[in-house]
Image 1 (cartoon, rainbow, N blue to C red):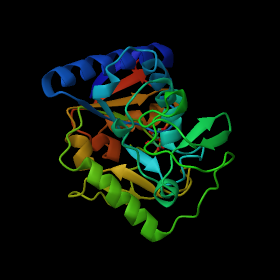
Image 2 (image 1 turned 120 degrees about the vertical axis):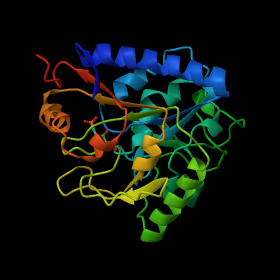
Image 3 (image 1 turned 120 degrees about the horizontal axis):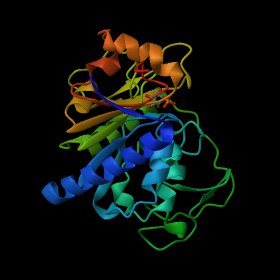
Length: 273
Ligand code: 6PG
């Protein structure tokens, strides 16, 4: 288990942002673009906030998500919304570089909402490319301002959303995948009870009882994650110590099945005193 131990989450985040920049530069020099899948949850937010202030070649960087909760992007549980607030709304990036899971809100209403505090303004008229405040959006769209209603999802929605995300993944190799670690050993949205679909690029999953949020998920498959050039886990806080110890002792959780992963830990999570 390749471990990098940092004094605290702040120093880990700074180093992770630096590593992102180096890996991006190498990929762009070698292959012309950098494909990265971002993690959800709370740990990586500080990393993404630090990325936002780096002068990176955003036009050659393509963002995907390792997993997403199937809620509208206006929902505070959305992993897209977390990245939008920490990073995307602060940088100038071509909208076609943001490959988010197209939740029904967009397919239903074909819109990209702009976040402003707790209110969601929908694009009214804006030049093509980047919308107001440099926010990525795919097409202008005349709808009034105000809170965008959340929509109930149906099973056929889930299948539709999965198919559209898989289309974005076809033929792609990730240069970097960011991962978090759940206290139950899950990573992305692959839980211990998940039936890992070995020949899929991504799959629908549902969290184990008691794991929040209890909503349908889409996750990159273990196969897709293992095919990435670099896999980085970010694990901080004493709550993750027990599960890390079990993984070190060989318990075969989903997170333990990621081959040649880098484990970026803070002191609180690491058993090395
Ligand atoms: C999600 C994440 C999930 C997360 C872990 C750790 O959508 O919930 O992708 O895999 O990384 O649960 O979450 P924390 O970083 O909040 O501890």
